[in-house]
Image (cartoon, rainbow, N blue to C red):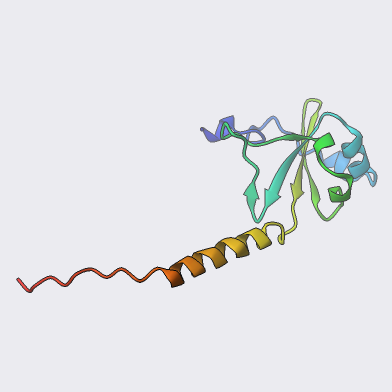
Length: 121
């Protein structure tokens, strides 16, 4: 995919500096059905099945996640507004630990494969 085809990579997205100064901006964005949310976790962006950026409707984001520490206003394009929802770092750690533990157990059960020695030439 060409960089210019990625959502938010175009120069038509306005940083909307005037809106950033409003104290009620997060509430306004939360109530606006045109707001789209991109998920960010451990520095990675949410990607859709078609390899494009996954932009969720604001209704798909739980109210508890909608905090000033986790939501970053990215800007607007026409009537659509974009925010990034930065997910907590600890999400997925339990799953990652289980995977690591299974891998270590499997490695401990399986004998190490050695290559047969070749006679000197």
